Image 1 (tube, rainbow, N blue to C red):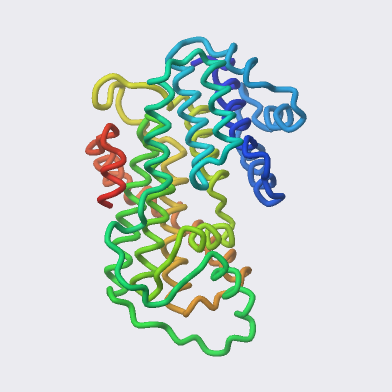
Image 2 (image 1 turned 90 degrees about the horizontal axis):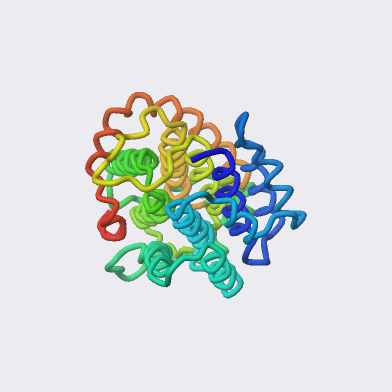
Length: 333
């Protein structure tokens, strides 16, 4: 993968991020932050972002710049992942993907297979068997709780159905698994990270008596400062710039991406989300927006240090993942 290929892949990913036509200011700011945080001597991600924003870049020009059929397939997979990162794509994103597939010269099976996998992950039930909800938590729940926190008085935690130690172990297991997925070169592995984070938060909420929906979890993550589209863009951006994405023959082909920066990102992000979610639901959802942001930033910094400690477990987990069964793995996790 040369620099021209990297630029084209990242341009297509950024075009996909804006394909829905309704990005809110917060989402635009998050995409801009990701673009400015990534880059290398060869790839100027911030400049690519400006080209996309000012419509100097197009699907056709980016598709033409890709040097191989495999990279064109990869570009489509990345675009599908971006469009589905924050939920099942809308009509505008569907039209964008159709245009992209045509520009890349892909066949219908080459388009349908990654789209089906992404859709399955984006619509995965948070839990296969859902019991009667103890406390309903709507999409507005996180914002409502945060706004009311300043005068909420003493915190009275609900009694969790699982012990604190069990929840800590669950959060660590999800963090190790997501760190392992970052080590894998297949784009399908990256697509699984956000659904696994959402399942983790769902299980934490349920342990404290809350039955959550996707909207609530997305709002909670956004309140902490973790945008779903931005997170996925950052994951794949690190892999593209690091030359870690691609098709690998056989199980692991050239081996794991040992020492990849992405592993710290996904391990730490998942760990921080889990630990802050524990505090939030144990305290009756009374943490303010600023408290959630501060708590996430603090735990994220700690988690980046923990990653080295769990590197052997992360690598071992990566070697056991069958990317061809990624949907079944997420469903069972």
